Structure formats: structure tokens, C-alpha cells
Length: 110
Image 1 (tube, rainbow, N blue to C red):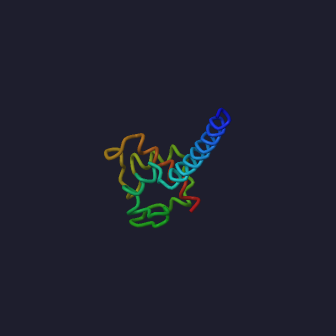
Image 2 (image 1 turned 90 degrees about the vertical axis):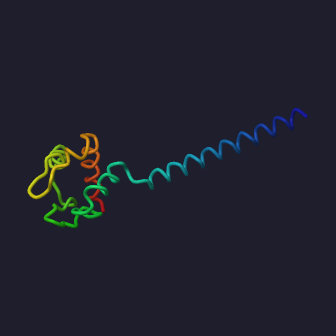
Image 3 (image 1 turned 60 degrees about the vertical axis):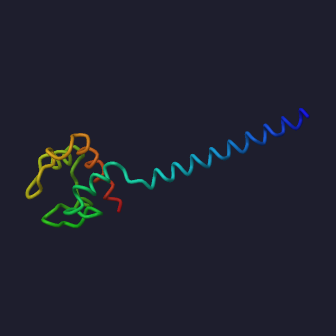
């Protein structure tokens, strides 16, 4: 009787451990598929002129795939605007502007 209980406990622990490992992998895969907060904000405010991949150039928008600006410079441009681009300081918080600026570096990989 004791051997049966022990065997059952070991089997149950193995099943639980394997189930949790798979759940973690599925959760991580789902998280990787979700767009970042910066990507969401970019799509809301920047997509119209810069395009999905940052290279559309509508209304004179800069090609973000070729941009050499640093993070600080990107934050400055998004905040205050440049040339025909309007600034977004009235529409977005500093944190959201920084998230968008960080996301624009990912556009170089597309």
C-alpha cells in the first residue's frame, strides 16, 4: 500500500512539473507574439507617416530604418517635432515618448 502511494505521488509530481514547464513555454511564446507597449503607441501615432516598417516617408517623414539618431535625439524629435513633424509632448507622457523612441530602433531589423 505504501509503495502505491509513493508511486502515485512521484507520478503526480512528474506530471505537474511537466505541465508547468509547458505552460511557462506557452506563456513565454504568447508574450513574444504580443507587441510591445512602444509598438502599440507607434502604431497609434506614427504609422500614418512613417509606415509599419518606418520607411514609408509620407508627408516628408524620415526613414526610421536609416536613422542615425541616438535615443536621446529621438526622444527630442518625438517630443518637440522637427521640420514638418509636429511634437507629441501634448499627446504623450515622457514615458510613452521614450517607449516609442526605443521601439524605433527595432525597425532597423525589418
